[in-house]
Length: 180
Image (tube, rainbow, N blue to C red):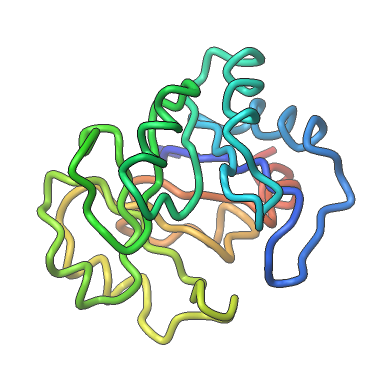
């Protein structure tokens, strides 16, 4: 499989989901299957910048700080904590653009992102946790650069053609089993 796997350590979501595994147990699985380890910084997902530091001490793999990061100060805080990459939702920041993965909220936003910027297309609508109406295929057609498929990935069979990477969180355990 020639797809980068971004394995997310997620113990809960603000949409009611909660893992029955601990952060440490999920980190172990993420470190086993991921090319990049995604660590939440947002408290709504039980994240923190201290968890970036903890993850950095446990692996040599690159760390993605996963959160909204609505300010450039949040991006700087993630980088200072040791993140190699930072997910930024709904905007293009003024700093560390080379380290940022941009998650547009709409196809309209996606159209404004230059092709040299890495993009994450989340199938989940962050306003309510449901599915977006726009599809991965529609989004991929608009961005010719590096493109990551995120959310609702249960197995390797769910990986869409055209994805350069996948970000797997809620279904990390199930996904990891599909790789065996």
